[in-house]
Image 1 (cartoon, rainbow, N blue to C red):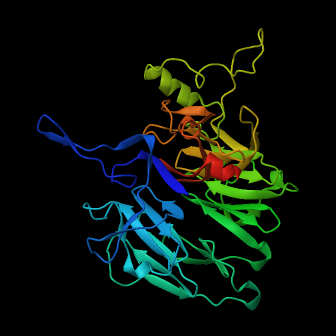
Image 2 (image 1 turned 30 degrees about the horizontal axis):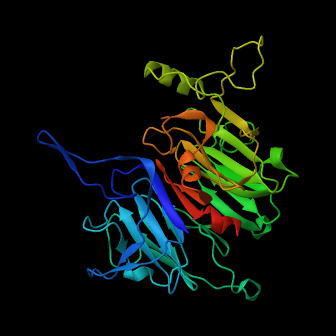
Image 3 (image 1 turned 180 degrees about the vertical axis):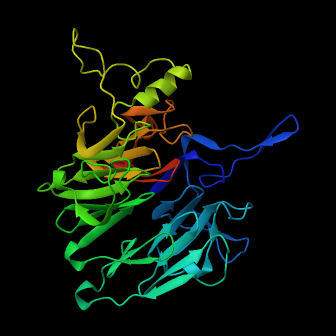
Length: 384
C-alpha cells in the first residue's frame, strides 16, 4: 500500500520542495496540485541512516502529518511544522510500540497497548504533558484502541484530555470537528454534540448540545462510518449511501452553494461542470437553482455516476470519499489543490482522475484541514 498527498504544503507536510528564487525573494511551494507519493523513509534516533518502512496509516492536522508505521514494533514519524528540514520525516523514539495516534495543532496523542500519552508540540518537552494507564477488560483483550476513543470515554485535542462517555452509547468510532463531535455506536446509530451554530449536529436547528444526542433523521438506518470537518458532518450507511449536513459555504456538502458560485464568478472562472446547471435538469424546467448555505438535517448525497461509498473523510471545508470500486471523489474548497483536480473549488463531487490514469485503486483517505492523503494499491492487487 502506498500513500499520496495533495493540497496545502506550507510546512512541508506532504513533501519537501526545492525553494525557487524570484528576484531576491525565496519562494516556497505551498500548493501540491498533483497527488505526490509520501516517502517511506524513517530517520531513527537522529542518525543519518534512513530506514524504509511502509506507512500503514496517516493522521493530519493543519500544519503537520503523522505517519504510523505499524510493521514490526511500530513507530510514528512527524512531517511539517517543527520537523527537521534536512529530512522529510522525523522519527520519535518515544513512539516505539504505539498502535494509533491523534494529532492537533498543539498536541500529539499516542496509544500504546497499556497506556495513552499526550505530548505538547508547542513546548517540545521531553516528557508527556498527560498520560493515562489503560486497563483493558478481559472481554476486550486483543481489541486495538481506536483513537480518540479509549475505555470509558475519549481523548480530546486539548485539556482536559480525558472526557467520559456513557457505556450505554457502545461507541464504535468517534470523529472530532472544530467544535463538535460525531459518534458511531456499535449498532450503527449516530450521536452528535457540541456547537450547533452551522447545523453540524443534524438535529434540524442551530442550537448546541452538551451531551450526545441521537440524530433522529438517521434512526433505523445503520451507519458504518462517520467524519467531521470544521463545521460539517458526513456519514455512510451499511449500503454505501452518503449523508451530509452542516455548513455548505464552500460546497463541502456537495450541495449548491451560492457563496461558492459568486466567488467563482468574481474570480473570472469559466463555467464548467461545477458552475453550470445540474446535468439532470430537463429542458424547459425553471433554471433558477436552490442554493443551500446550512443543511441542518442529514441529506442524502447522490454521486454521479451512481456508486457505493466505502469510507469518507473531511477537511476544514472539503470532503473526500472512496467508493467500493476504488475511485476517489472530492468536493468543497480547493484553493490549495486539496481536491486533486484542476478545479479550484466545487460544490459537486468530482472523481480524482490521477489514480485511475495510473491504474491505482484508492482504499483509504484521510483529510488534513487543507490537504488530502489517499492510500492506494495497484489495480491487479486490488482485483486479486
